[in-house]
Amino acid sequence: MRDSQATYEFATKEEQLRRAFAVHVQANNREHTIQYARLLLDNFPSAKTYRYIGKVISTGEVLRLSLRPFRVALLSSFSIEFMQDALFSMGVANGFVIEFYLTGFDTFRQEIFDPNSGLYRQALDLAILAVEGEDWLPEIYCRYSPASPKLGNIKDKFKGDLTSLMTSFRGKSSLPILVHNFAQPSHYVLGIADSSNQQGQECLARQMNELLQEVCKQFSNCYVLNYDNLVSYAGQEQWYDRRMHHYAKFPLSQHAVGVLARAYMKYSRALLGLSKKCLVLDLDNTLWGGVIGEDGLEGIQLGSNYPGSAFVEFQQCILGLHSKGVILAIASKNNPQDVEEVFASHASMVLRRADFSAFEVHWNAKEESLRRIANKLNIGLDHIVFVDDNPAECEHIRLVLPMVTVIQLPTNPEQYSKALLKDGWFDTLSISEEDIRRSALYEQRAQAEALRETSNDLKGFYLDLDMTIHFSPVNAKNLSRASQLTQKTNQFNATTRRYSESDVIGRVKDPAWFLSAVSVTDRFGDNGIVGLMMAYKNEGEFYIDTFLLSCRVIGRTVETAMLAYLSREAATLGVNFIRGEIIPTPKNTPVRDLYERHGFTREIGGENDISIWRLECENAKIEFPLWIKHFDDKTNEQ
Image (cartoon, rainbow, N blue to C red; front, side, top):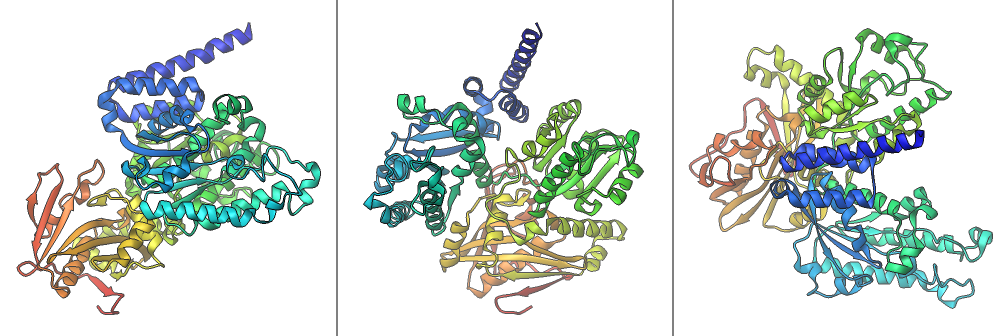
């Protein structure tokens, strides 16, 4: 009877989520649709759910238009088209509609080498190269023999094969490509003796992965998916379906399909600039077990014994995210004095009060706390991941702030870290110096904002800030940050074009392009590289392709100094006109009047359309703000 009742409740929950998802699709509620797609996939990951999400989305034509198109080429040694439903549904859960370019299984070489293949004729966003070890390296996997004379040459042959393949691909396309490495063989011919043999399958497979990593590093926009790690974590028995391998040339289990699709999503989000910035945490039964207001400092669960050890482990996981640049904040209904005592006095606390850039501890609604945190940090609510153990709080935030990513923690604290990291919400393609220093940078911003509140007028505030701007050529030292800014900056970004490091390198090498990284220091410290300009010279004019500024320094006239520097460079190069483009997005309202404020004349477009602006350099000169000291690092001149 109990099993029947549990099954009924389980099915009822699934049906409720399905109905809610369908209702929001038909009502064209984009953010709520994304939220309920996530809930369905988290609670009921199955082929049935994948197909259902795709079927419902196909009926919502208006909604589809609000989801960003993302075009993916699937190149594989197996029938990877069986991944389509899972990938499409997870794309919906991330705010985009995936369109596929598929080839027959094991035709990846033909596609890459043929300059007329669809791979190069399609307008794509990402290529995925998924090849199983037994298909590329049968001498190591399915046809292994320790006495084989081919073993001595296999490394050189594989390295040459992969290098030739990637050289051909990159010679025809700058498309980002994600390449699987190889899982270990499912069994070893030598049995337990394999691990001690330098020519054993385990050792050879690892060497092939090292070679694959080495080769891929030589090519721009080429990323390696650690497929071996995914298979190892799940286990070979859980990952592979040998019946499907023989029956349909598709070796993966349904469990593997879901895990692999989530892994692809991490790279897709990072390429689209959709990585999250801020982790907002509850306290009671989240950072520690129990309720501090009821259990007291000595009564909460936090220490060397379970369950306290699981909460320590979770805090260590959070600290790891913080170390790579994730902003931390607290949103808790609690007595501030009790919470401060835990941070100040509990010996097992891993996280410190200073690790948090925003601290909302009171009895007001968490909805209000999240809005205040976003406002204080000057980030969009869509950059926030909210983590809480309370189902009611999580559901409320999903309803009233659907743009916030919500993670409801599982019942057992030892599962907390897995729940937080599973989807890779904070994953980025590279880590810059500014990322590592992000919390300190936001603390500097908070100090600057406090100064603004005490200043009598804006001019006095600007003078008190004591700002200095350095304009630097984009080079190997700041390349990663320059590319990252194009991928992550949304508010003060005139065109919101996303560029990889290889794209930026190409422009650095082209004499027609002008690129400048912008760094700012003030009385509170070094803000790091906060701006980027990219423009190209063509027939006597500068055309601004990229003009962006980090939200940390918006409202300080830095953009005026940037345009003044650009106009000075234009005059030096004999440029007569500067043209700039504004491409409106839902997030870049702060930049819409950039060119109008600085004397440009509108040539094309209306207020809410793509617009082109023009400045005649001879008749209009943009001056540097008097309160900003500025230096040109390429000439060491002010």
